[in-house]
Amino acid sequence: MELTLAHYLILSAVIFALGMTGVLIRKNLIVMFMSLELMLNAVNINLAAFSNYLQDMTGQIFIVFVMAVAAAEAAVGLALIISLFRNKQTINAEELNIMRG
Amino acid sequence: MLLPIVFTIIKILIIVTVILLAVAYMTYAERKVIGAMQVRLGPTHTGPYGLLQPIADAVKLIAKEDLTPDMVDRPVFIIAPLLTMVPALAGFAVIPFADNFTMFGMEIKPYITDLNIGLLYVLAISSVGTYGVIMSGWASNSKYALLGSLRSSAQVLSYETAMGLSLVAPVLLAGSLSLREITLAQAGMWFVVPQIVAFVVYVIAAVAETNRAPFDLAEAETEIVAGFHVEYSSMKFALFFLGEYANMYLVSTIATVMFLGGWNGPLLPPLVWFVIKVLFIMFIFLWLRATLPRLRFDQLMSLGWKVLIPIALANLMITAIVVHIVR
Amino acid sequence: MMAQVAFYILAVLAVVSALGVITRENPVHSALWMLLTFFSVAGIFVQLGAEFVAAIQVLVYAGAILVLYLFVVMLLNPRAGGFIRMPAKYIIGSAVSIVVFFQIAITVWSSGIFKNGTIGPLPYAEGMNNVRAYGNVLFTKYLVPFEIASLLLLVAMIGAIVIARKD
Picture 1: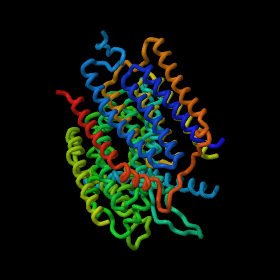
Picture 2: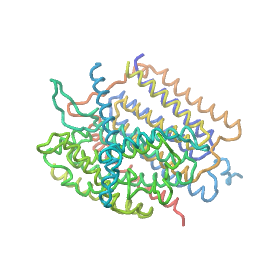
Picture 3: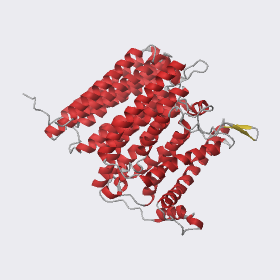
Picture 4: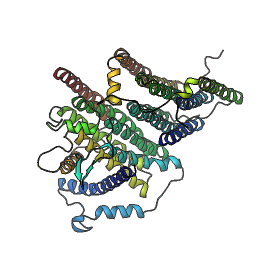
């Protein structure tokens, strides 16, 4: 079977769903962040596939913007996790329930 | 269809064999050169002038018992040495060792492949080498190893930035990321002449990247025993050792291609020039090790962030302005 | 033929390693599976003719972001790595993602244009390659977004320093 756009879109959908599952079922904040990166990667596959399909560079350009956002997110998110751990001695999402009424 | 594949496999085999031999004899050269600098002889017993010493070392390492401590994370512990070794070798895939030449009526290309992203490929592949250090330190379940790998990851992240920034300046001059095109662009003038600042920054960052003295905080014997590979023995230790030296060769090769004009040079054949330049940079590595004491960790960090990166950035900016005006 | 074999190998690697990321108890193991995912996705990019992006993927994601994650994991050494305790949430979480997946998949299959969409090497003019074409577009049409991205990174850097510093 010839490779088509659909192959790449389905692959990206699988990875996106896996990343989403990770965010929903894990309780370690760092692993949740990693699952977010998985979802961003799935988006990047889509962008690259459409860039190839439409014979247009724009998709590839946006991948780099997505990566810049991911890098910024990782830096700020990990800083937050570190200061959270400093104050609470845990990064378990279930134990961070101080806002619960 | 089949012939190019066979050719590529032959080239890979040649390059890997040569690198492994070069690594073995680098350890010999290191002991001899540092010995001479410290007014002693170095190895003399095994074979004439101690020339068989690397082979004896290899035999010893292979014959030793392969210990795996009890509480280690076994899969990670086993993969870690491979992850230091393989990227260092894979980086050589894009290095142009000499110009294309004709032999037996066939055009022979003395490199495995010429990617249009060659330089980025090398940087990307060598950044993976960090994982070997991080993984081994974590998986060993030993505090010395963990300290070593924490130091190493912070160090490599910091100096990778300076290294990348210093390499962008020659890329601007050559107008290409392909290592072959960069070499061809240096036929008239080696980039070390206009880019002496970038070259110095690159060499310092490269020494730090390969965890060599005076930046060997990750394996500082006198502070944290041997750092990340303290729990390793036998073949696994040998792989770390090979990886470190192959990495030194890789960064020297990149310095040769980016700054010293690659194979370009008068009179001697291209390949000979290439080897001479690589060995010269390797000699600088040994020289630094014999001369300078180890830095403290805060000195290391402030050197990276407060000295090397600003210098590399300023140099890059000036280069960009000059290139813009000239073109 | 070669392209298809390569695609299926890379796709299986990517999916298996993504599964590894979300199922490993230990965050360090998750991070190492993540490394494999990044490499497989980089391979997919190469297959789609986006070599520059593939190199940046390995350089930025594997070389910098993931090292940062591992660094934080090793620094904090958190005990609790595992999963949420309530099985109900577990099932609901998985079910939601499965539904999302099928929604995307059905959309993809039901629209005819996707089935015939051909994927192949991009045609470049003489003397052009992926990197040159990329640079030409990035530094002309997308120059302003590029500068804004650099501003974003600067803000993130300052923010990270302010948040994480001890005072």
